Length: 411
Image (tube, rainbow, N blue to C red):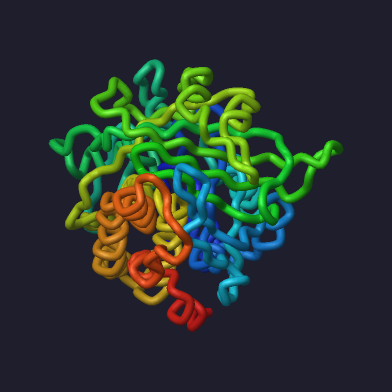
């Protein structure tokens, strides 16, 4: 069976590796002219690390990443109100990794080239359109700059893994319109600095009107004992001109420093961290409304093309990797690829929609707004409503598919 994959990001590359391991022929088509490491930090939760481990990649990721051991929540005064272990420390069979998104993508790309071969990957091939018959599907590719047709490829199935502005999704749903903007803007940067807390902790500070996330994403320190720290400031900006998601749009760094100027705690200095970044990028927090159907005959969607969601709950990359794993499982089980895609659709569409909608409700981070509402001027330790917070956190793990008991039962 020959599979055409549109998009060479984390979802598309993981899908190619899963399918190749299962014995399928894959061809990957990427619109950009050059594959290079974009983005900043990203988390891979235990349920998707399981998939990457089964591909033999755990040690290679570990050589670049930090194995996250703890997640701590603080209010805007730096008071801790929630802490929990993560990854293996929480009892999972697999770790949680924090890593530079570009490092992860390039690792996957290198594995694809080494395992499958250079001739499986096509750059500067922008999908123009596709059509299908009872027996196959054909994709027509163009040069994005000239609009001229440069290639046709026919296969048994086509997978649209081409991101939030997916051409495949647009052809399947031509009247959908643009992504849904949350009126929140993410300000992202990386800073070399001394480690905070135990050196492998992820922290969430503030509330969802003004929030800061920070965690290390590099396995080893430099000669000065400093680590690369990924940080994300989330500000509720209201109506904004930022409607298109662009990894490379620079932000006003001084403005951000001023907004966070009072967030100086004995364990982290937030304005100093912002000032230490070489560049700061702004990124509108957007998603799309969940679809009822991804699969149409021999064509289906995967990753952000299928279910773009807010990057909440450390769950940005994980759903795409789970898609790749389940899709491969169905194609192995079913001789008829159309039946396999329908089964993939039946399982993954509702599962992903739950996470999209849960993230719109702030996911696990709703405990930040709860504490801000209940204790806007701070709290005493004995006032922390532990059971109410725990209920929110446990519910998200179940919805997102990484509660310990269920996950550890898998191979």
